[in-house]
Length: 116
Picture 1: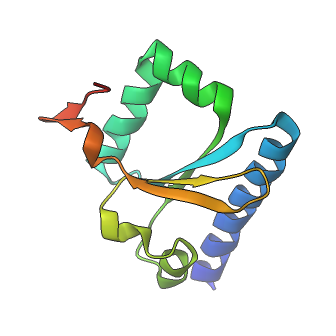
Picture 2: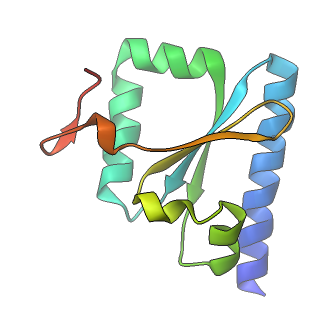
């Protein structure tokens, strides 16, 4: 029952984000990872602390943080996005159609991230 509730909460979060994106004429950016993931925390901090990146994200996306807890249904829902490692970014349009799945490893530099 707990797994079903977690999946429903994720689906609700994404549905709410798509609805909000449609109203604001934006896309949805899902950061798929977790509070347990060091790279996920670093990526979020990297985006939030860089003025240009934060403005780019805030202006164009409704952001959802999707916390993965070894749930097969959630993996299936994301088309097994974990194959890229964490964090992985999922981009949806304002109609809820997935546009792209992207690993963040292209931005990794040493023990952190670099936008260059």
